[in-house]
Image (tube, rainbow, N blue to C red; front, side, top):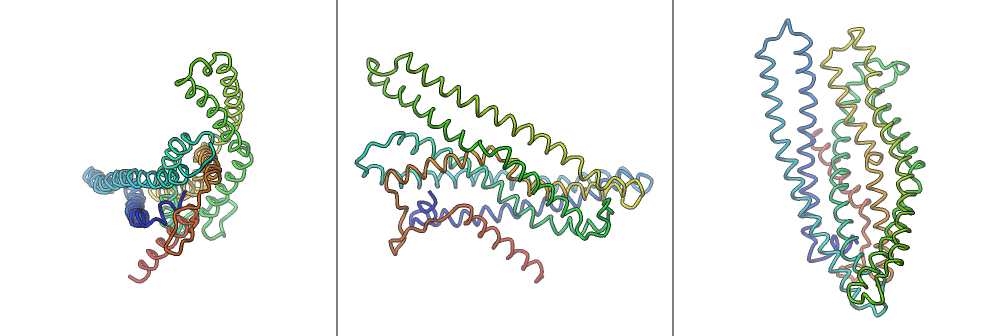
Length: 357
């Protein structure tokens, strides 16, 4: 899956330079998010202290926001467009790498066309969406955790008055707790998604055979039996997704009130201004949302795990060894390890550059 793109001489420039460009654009966008977070404080302080500010101050703040929002939109558009092109190249590399091995396989492999066309397409699509989300989350954490840590000193959180970086620890604790609960609530979803693809494949196979031979295939009774299996599996899938949705939406709503409960007493006692409160709430939301990325994308991750399992089975069936390097050894790159190491190295480099300036 990964060596066909990242270890291929044909695609190595697209693979690695593409990663660098995505990281650079995402970093620039996150820096604009930090600037907008700073803007919150000044803007809401103007609204709170109307006696010492004019309408001109209000419109000046709006102009500053527009100056930040416009490049933010441009960067977001550029990231989305290039990521789509980049993942299409990855899909092309995977597709023809698999085809080379599949054509040399003497045995008949059930569902080959679905693996090569649909599963690779879905894999690329999910990597496109989830990959950019993960990159943005990591970059946001690198940028906002120090900010939230400093802002924590300005507020007194109930029961945590003497804890340094209290708001950071609250964000970490709530996100970690949410992730653990999500794991248990959604533990059966990957298996059900995998079974769903199996019954869908059986139904599709019968229809494909019926296109060429309606006399021996496509019997209505058999198709109804196959579809009953689809309905049964979807029924179980919907039930478990229902459990997970109850938890997901409950957690999401609870996280709206958590920073307000933590900051409310400081605002009411006059310890902080409305502007500081909005700045802290936004920073807390950025950190908490980044830490909760796996909760918010659990269903997508479940689907990706199911697709990954099917593609690994297909690789085994066709004797896939991956794209070879010059030493004729498969690199066996793992996508999560690759992205984690690359993002971490990029983030550390940028932080070192900041400290050296």
